[in-house]
Length: 125
Image (cartoon, rainbow, N blue to C red):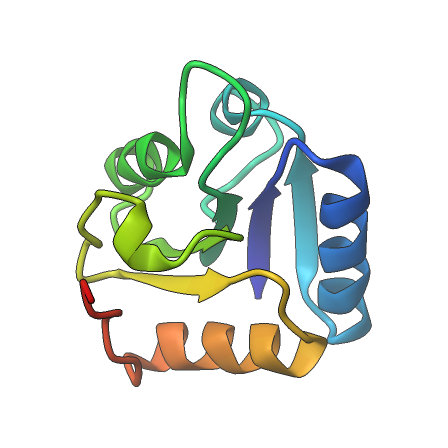
């Protein structure tokens, strides 16, 4: 399975990258939304994992929306240290949310649930 990983924090990105590669995923990483969306080598990822706060003019929800336009079947896992109800956003039905910090097993379960449609959208509180 091909995963595009977007996080501006190098340590977080590297940690998640290691978890995914250890689980057998083919991962392309990007440090910014612009790098992720304009990368020539990215060929329709199955899953996009993106932090919500990316420290640029675009946030994870913007990246998710752009990814859905580029790759209509991509599934998106948004990650953040904030509780979902503090993001002020709604999730697309193809998307899922995972709160940091998370374990490798929680990440893999979230991806499995996302791909298999077996998740419940987070509540707004």
